[in-house]
Amino acid sequence: MKEVDRENVRQNEEELFGEKLFGEKLSSEGTAFCAEDVEKSLRKRFHKELFSRFARAINEYELVQENDRIAVCISGGKDSMLMAKLFQELRRHNKFPFELVFLVMDPGYNEANRQMIEYNARLLRIPITVFESDIFASVYDVEKSPCYLCARMRRGHLYRQAKERGCNKIALGHHYDDVIETILMGMLYGGQIQTMMPKLHSTNFEGMELIRPMYLIRESDIKHWRDYNHLHFLQCACRFTEAAGADRPDRGEMSKRLEIKRLIAELKETNPFVESNIFKSVENVNLDTVIAYKKKGNKCHFLEDYD
Image (tube, rainbow, N blue to C red; front, side):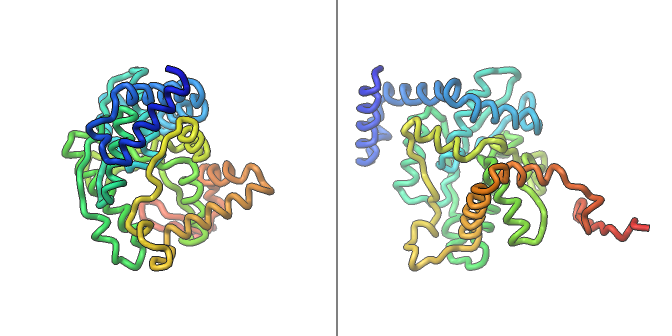
């Protein structure tokens, strides 16, 4: 199919989406063509930046094992949608058997946002399973750390739904930039050194594990892939960002993370290695030069064995 035909297909589908008719009328030809085009871009144009780093994280941190059943958690944004396609590509290589469940939680999206997620899933041939919750309504009036509470509640729902579907892991779409921002946020706002781990055992759901296979992928490369394929995803679809900015000032975590993004960008202007240095800093912790540290909740102080 020629490039001009591709654009016509996309324009027609977008018109159908705007009229809320895509669920019935989205053409199978247009869906297949877009999915195949996106998959081809992962194998060729973005193989090094995206798929290779995805596979490297899985191997380096031992994120996927034989016979795993993984709930790939999709929020509707660029990161989780790309993660779903990368998992499909990984399974295509079929080095060992594992299963995927593409799990979407609707925490109270407005109708347009819910439809956009379903539209993109159909366009990219991602067979999603959707369940609903009322998390947005539950945290909307919370003044202190609503984003943190929302994230914790969302994760709990995802664990529960994944376990009910026979999964032993949930996969989240956090990327390299999320990791380094989390490190700096902990230092500057939390007074602690910690990182976003590539995998974690659940403390509340026995036998469940959280994995982050996008751990080594840069956000700029994700955006490039999205724009190269003319894709449009949800930005932030929570109730806070839907409300008028004047009525709802910046809410804690959201404004802090934006400040950190800007700080890193400024530092990079004079030090091009600042991002990789932040990332490596939590891999090169020298306990001989640390005043105190925690291990499994117990605090250790350098004076304990100084003499």
